[in-house]
Image (cartoon, rainbow, N blue to C red; front, side):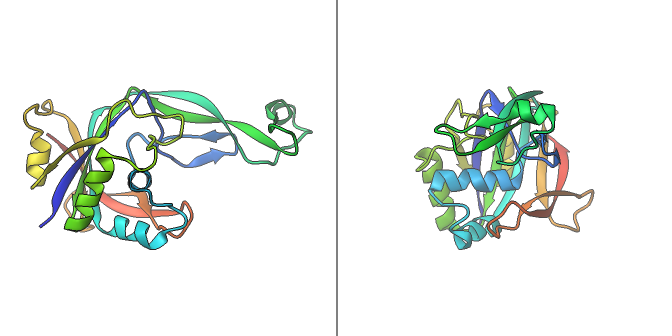
Length: 220
């Protein structure tokens, strides 16, 4: 019998990936992706994402992820450095060039989109009882510092939000119910009515590739 573990994501800024439309711009999805949640749990559990692929796959294959959207927040743009290649013949790229401390290399500055003042609850549907207990303990006492998309996106509250024995009870959120009309994104099977494919299911092959999972938008 599955258990349902609630993860509360609270913080001033968040970032959830998104397609890179140019080398100088990276957007964000409007809600947490499954790949983000897997990475977040890996941080809490002390699992090195790129060096413990069997553990990451077990985590991915044992979870369904339901998302409660409490506040969509607003979009802002920040800057970050990444990469080492640049074109000195391009005036903008030359201006963006950053010398690393001590010299011996450079990084580029590019724009990174963020969600500001957004709030989400993630309900993890966990089939494996032992894994559920490990996740709960990790959320209460994270082994590594968990952040909300980037290392500069800090949590403002601890993420553990309780354990429930059914999805319905988790959605009811007693003793403080969610407001009527709150949107929740339900993880469903491929043949579910009104299901929608979204590209956020991590392949867990040691890189950032994703494939699709199916969800359905509902109102509480």
